[in-house]
Length: 217
Ligand code: AMP
Image (cartoon, rainbow, N blue to C red; front, side, top):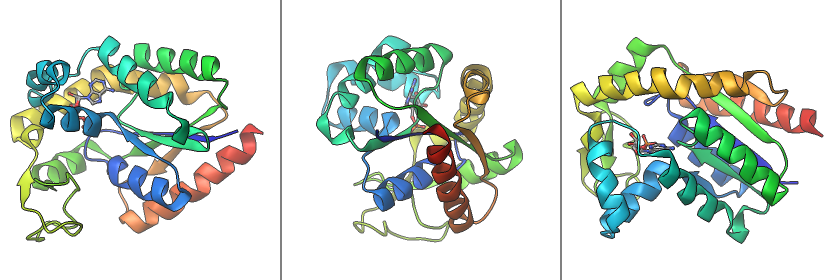
């Protein structure tokens, strides 16, 4: 049975970084729907290009498209030992579709972790966040001058612009918060305090996930 983890949390909570680190440590693929969309846009994929305007405004891309992307990705053989999902599900409809998919694939229960951070802290973090224009990695710190991974130029993400940040937080409250309620009563649901040093969050996250994995057996 695979270690199937969903990293939930508002934009700016650090869930992408945590998902990446955890996936690397455990040798699991990290599946980020935001990264898949940005990659497809770079490759001029027409469906992704059609979604770009919504992304740039901080709005959600439609459920059918996102569900199809994730269904395709989870059909690949590298997810056999498990996966770490980052940025999906973002609506209750996506969460329901993922449950159906897991049933069809005969995969084990989902471990859901909410990386919780208070809103004022999120606004502060998002306004300062920069990513590499070449490989998309988050900048290591506010005063980094180049990407720590490939040396590429650091830029602000189009959707980290101030007005758009507020829109993304509004969309999160309205569409994605209900997903937490959808999962909350499950024995494999956990919350980690994301307003701590990243190393601390990572170590608590590891312990919580191992605990949840033991509980699901
Ligand atoms: P992210 O990098 O996860 O913040 O995603 C960037 C943008 O991609 C989001 O603001 C949405 O426009 C779109 N997106 C990514 N994942 C999803 C999803 N599961 N459902 C709808 N839209 C998504």
